[in-house]
Length: 464
Image (tube, rainbow, N blue to C red):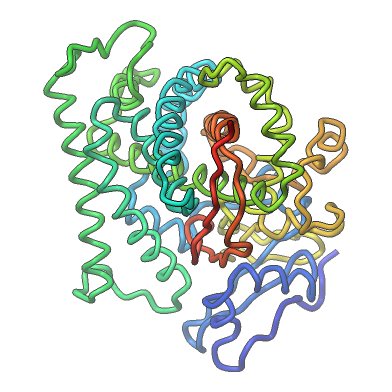
């Protein structure tokens, strides 16, 4: 049945809900569901430039948009267009034949067996992080900064191997600039041409050039080195064992024998750097922060890790299945703080979702940040409770009550990598340190990913 009246906030007479979205998008989403229901329309911007956003908050609606009617909801909206402009047309933003070709080339590099082979890089970077934490002044660190750098170094090591240092600093400084640029343009009713020499445009374009240059330089050097790298490492063995992800991407072929050209390689690398470090950094930051506020749950997580790793060894991929409580901690963290708080699409044809007709051409947001707190599916939704993710309770819930990795045919290809990295890192760090939260509340904002707008300080106490 089609609703006769479209639900949603009225906003201000001239600009609708524009200020609310700019000031506190996440709070605006939550209030919209509470006050108006599971499918709503938000208008933002002045007359003549007013945009309409259709927001879907229910698990049933999320499943319809992302899975059962995925062909009707494309990645053609403003945010994906801005990401495409800054980071290229990699796997996150590509569509149609481009996407299918890229997926076929890249999918073999993210099988469970292949991803498990990245555990050694995860262990190397976790050990370096623990050593740095042991020397932290007064034992105080900012988790946001620490986890961002850790996750970036880990994915860069997996991508670039021995070239990790060359890439890390550039990416670390350039990504926040571009993220803010994409966010601001996505929420702006008026997007001036990027080439106009405005201060923000110049800063963003400089960051973009720096990213392109460092990636292109590494790719070109690899091409010149050929099968054997400068360090003598064979990059072309039949199974690809021991090679970094860039070498595997460069060697990948589709069914016609075609490979990625240098521009396509750079675009895939940039998307992997974006999706592979900010999402994991968010999950690790909030997992440790939540445990730092909940000593009982932290004690249980520590016992699990300490018993499994009692001999002092690094965790391996085989240990992942032996850490069920830490996995539940991580899943509950991603429920409360999904790294992608909203997921955008554009409707091809008019479609009824939850009794509301969404018109053709409409910009649509499914919002994990809200769905993960939906009172119809989560009891006391703001409470941190890892026991929500026992196998029995997971099986009893709607498939799309929890979807931090998206869903349907465009679900995140790196889901197992993110889970493996996060669980193994948590196990190694909690074995070594007790964590106590200093900053109890953390201001958040909506960007390409969930953004921190303040420190996330904790005090670390080495365990004897």
